[in-house]
Image (tube, rainbow, N blue to C red; front, side, top):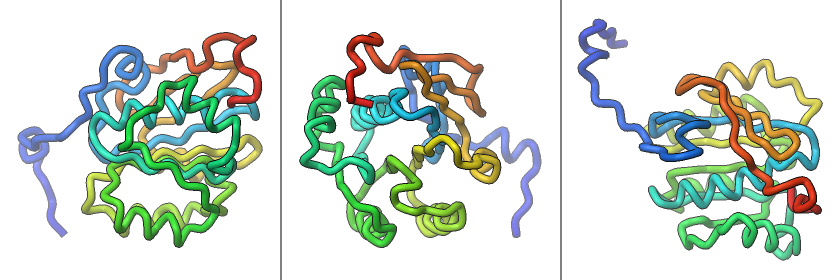
Length: 196
């Protein structure tokens, strides 16, 4: 196992995403393998946040959006994508609850970002996540996991770079890349409807 001096680390070139505007305020300039854990109460805007995130990420490369909770032929999913301006063909959505499907898609799809909405719906354990992340550790792969409320985050939150809490239509982040801040996810309370 190799060791590094402080100078070795200082001289390393670290690839980061040059996020701009509200995304930079919320997430900073994270490295290319960064991960987030997204949680919050039911109907707070988690899926809307993920849709916006997917569209934003698509400027860099392909995004796998696992919509485990909502079917592809769902009217609310269709409306959410429209509301969030998700138009990039680099955003690829799939409805599955099988980890083996997700593994195959990552292996063969050339994805740079993986959004799983939600971890509970695919029955992904912490060990499953670690195994997948280890399997693809040589890739420039960024993970974004939605967790339902009521699940203990203790084991998970130490293994991700940023914790994003979505509540009442706002996303609040804290983590390794900047100060805690917030971003509006839902346009206003009256527009929320059933598009969370």
